[in-house]
Amino acid sequence: MSTKNTSAETAEFNDTKALENKLKKKRNKKKKIALIILSSLLALMLVIGLTGVIWLKTDMKSFVKFAFWLFPDDFVVKVGVWLIGDTYADLPQYDDGTSEWSDPLGDDYEKEDAPTVEPPKPEQEPEFEEIEGWFDGTNVSDDYEDKVHNILLIGADTLDGSSARSDTMMLLSINTEKKRLVITSFMRDSYVDLPGKGYNRLNAAHSRGGPQYLIETIQHNFGIKIDNYAKVDFTSFKEAVDSINGIDVIVNEHNYEYFSFHKFPEINGLSQAQACDGSHVIHMDGKTALGYVRARNKDYDGVSGGDFGRTQRQRDFLTQFVNNCKTLGFNELDALLKTLLPYIVTDMPSGEIKGHMYEIMDYIKYDLSDTRVPCAGSWEYYKTERGAEVLNINIPANAAYVKAKIYG
Image (tube, rainbow, N blue to C red; front, side, top):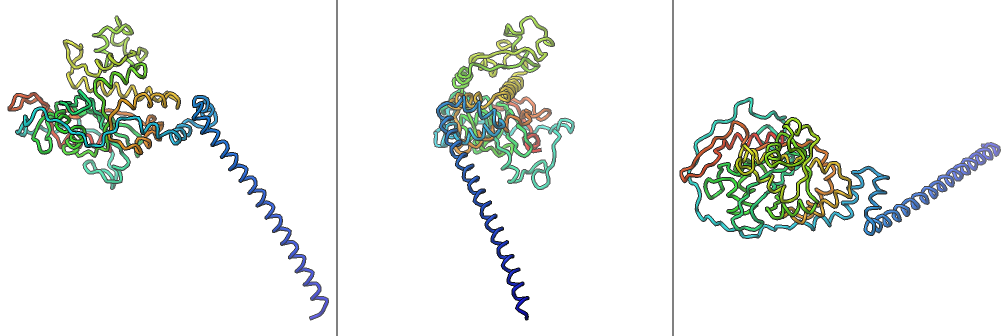
């Protein structure tokens, strides 16, 4: 090998090495610059975050106003709940399930099984979607049940166990898979099997064993898994409505009869068509709202339909309340929750409460529908051997019906 070739190769190697070193230094310089920029951004984010937390704690209104200007509403709500969510979780009255419940009527239960009621006609059955592996019209998979949270809303005479029958029983189903809310009224006079105690009205279950036994009774008869309950009594309902300065309800075909009978000035003298055109709003305080959701007597309340009409108005009332919430920003929603939650008794763990608050802006955008049990064509009036007037219902048909509405 000649010296000339060796010198040329050495020179080429040195040039290559020099180029590699130059590129390496350039890459290292870029890495340093990137690291400096990243560190600066992280430091800036930390400062902004700490400033935001301090600002949130000291001047929440201004902070939230700025945050809404800078970010989407959902993001602001979720950050806000993440920062102060424990506040919500600590507000309700928590029931750990150890409360003792009286049984004031002793063994005064119906022992007979009522005559079988024919199922609804095909045209009365609800349409629903079968979801392969999840829901076939009868069976609900565990995976799908995890995506639907069922909360039993209870309105009782009192919050303790002193003969507290539950005249209002509405199941709020939050279906996160189908992005919808379903409100189902379980009518109080439905004649059902109280586990271990014989047949009686559904509302008797609460006075026998409290919310947990009521949940057990509904699950036993209708096969619906109920996750938690939330309860108010007459006093707490009235005080809760007053605490938020009343509730606005739009006049419609469900409530016109009541408002017209009581001559509410907002629609007094108007025909039903005029009153129900969507532009007339009744503002109700606590006392007025309580009278409205309890009304079922033609002579005293001016309403027809008995408990069927009452449960329809209750669902309409709750639907309108949810729709009102859709227009609220974080400030208003935060104030509303902090005002209402202390009036509620629930068995929902604090972690789950915070989780639901975290998703609440998504929930109130869901489609909302309502229904009742018993469904049309599945019941008949019946007088028991002891003289109690009840709704004798086809339980299997209603179990299938409510599952179809919630899961289908």
